[in-house]
Structure formats: structure tokens, C-alpha cells
Length: 352
Image (cartoon, rainbow, N blue to C red; front, side, top):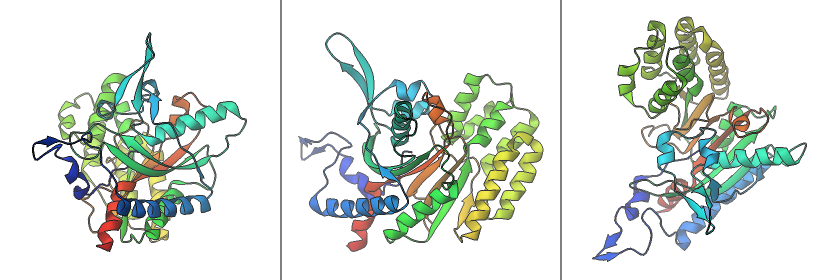
């Protein structure tokens, strides 16, 4: 998951690469981290690893360079995300393979799991943690984003979506961050609605990519949808609520329009009930998922309840098809990622 969450002040030092007529010796979007910064960074890293280890997660680290086909053959990233990937040919003088600087940590972790499944009857760990950077070529802001994240594969019975959300809140709480709200969506709902249309697979995929990038103009191009599917899509794009009853109402309304959505909506009801029982505030935004193709079910973000318009601290979700798409056996999977640089800047500002 590509954890964002960066505050505006993180980006300021990267906006200009020429100062007083002299070009910066640093590449655009890259920045140094001084000793004060690193002291806060290491404390957050230590807290994260302690929380994850107590919960049975084992730390791994994957290479910075990954083959491009890891992200293209399984259609794991949207076209926009692929456009932002650093890609080049790893040339040996005669031939070479196109590689990328890891644009997303979840896919690298899933590749690690698949390769370890092939070597052993049981992988060395089903639930893993990592602290490593991801790289995105963006016009402004950081292009190297340090992340910490948790991923759990293979249907570990105790690891549910709510369990992962609680771990994320526990981690943020250990950093002194409170007053949080969880925003929930479900990527499968958009797919089910588009799948009920006369669109070709390629057309549905393009529309899905634009919908999860919140391109509202897509609604003008959905003439191939049935009237009930279009009505369901409009509801998903325009409603939100913050109670179990609201989720049940969505299930009644959209489920009656498209019965194929009822399993996903029943799952959303179960998750909101568990969150409510644990007194965890949440808001339902059914169609607001993340710009990754690999999500298959519930997605979540965790933000400051008073500053919901700011980028979330943590992003995550369920991606049960990814392991099989990468060549492994069918396995469930869920995880989340936090932006270490954003959390570090928040920690520093709290001590000023």
C-alpha cells in the first residue's frame, strides 16, 4: 500500500532545485534527513517494530529494484500509478530487463511470500512487517517515501480486517496520536457494478481506474449500464454515513438493485458492528477506494477525526486475489502502510 499522509511542510524543501542561482546537488524530490530528524524517525520505527513483533509479525526487507513485469502482468497498479514509477533497463551490455524502483511495498511483500511458498511447504512467516522506502515520480513533493507496514497472507484465522485496523490504531496510539476515525470503502462494489454492464473487460478496467481516481466525468460515459446499475453507482459515489444502521440501509438499497453486491455489503455490516462494539469511530464512503488494482474487498484509511480532509496516517485493505495473480496458490491477504516521513514530521512538530 502506498501510504501518503505527508504534511505540506514536508514538501516545501523539494519545490525548488535552484537556490541563489545555484542548482541543488540533490535530485528533485529527494531530501536529506538530519540527526534530529533521524532520532524521531528511529523512535517511531522502534515503536512500530515492537507493536508488530508483539502481535506475531516477522520483519522482512525486499530489494529496491523489482522487475517491471511484477507490476504489469498481474495488473496490480493503475495506469496513473505505473506512469509515476521509476523505470529503466537493467543493461548488461547485450540485453537487459526493464526494472522499476519499488513503487509499492505490498506487491514486493506478496512476491516474497509467493517465492517462499514455492520453496517450502510452509512459508517462514504468514504475517510480516517492513520499514523501507517506495519511489514515485511526482511533479512536486517527496519522490522517496519511507513506509512502515504490515501484511498478512494465507488466511491466518486470528487476522481479520478489524484486527488489522486495531493494530494500526494501537501503533498510532503508542506514538501519542489519538482522536482517530476509520474511513471504510469496498473496492469489490465498483467491480460488481461495472461487471453487470455490457462493457468489455478492457472498458470496465479503464472505467474502474478512473472511478478510483475519483474522476466524476466517468458518470457521463456509463450509458452501457443498466438503469439499476447506474442508480447503484450514483449512490456509491455520493453517499456516506457513520453508523451500523447506515451500512444496513446501504445493503437494503443497493442490494435490492444489484443482488450480487449483498455478500460484500454483509461483510461491511459485520466490520462496522465490530468497530462499533470496540468504540472505534468510523465513516462509510463506499466507493472511495485506493488507486491500486489489487484491492478486492474492504479498504480503510485512518485519519485525525478533526482533520479528515488531510491525507490519512494509514492506508490499507484486503487483496485476496494478489497472491494467485503473482503465480502463487489462492490465499487471502490484508495489510496496511503508514508514511514514516509524515509521522516523523508530526513528532518533531509536537516537540517544538
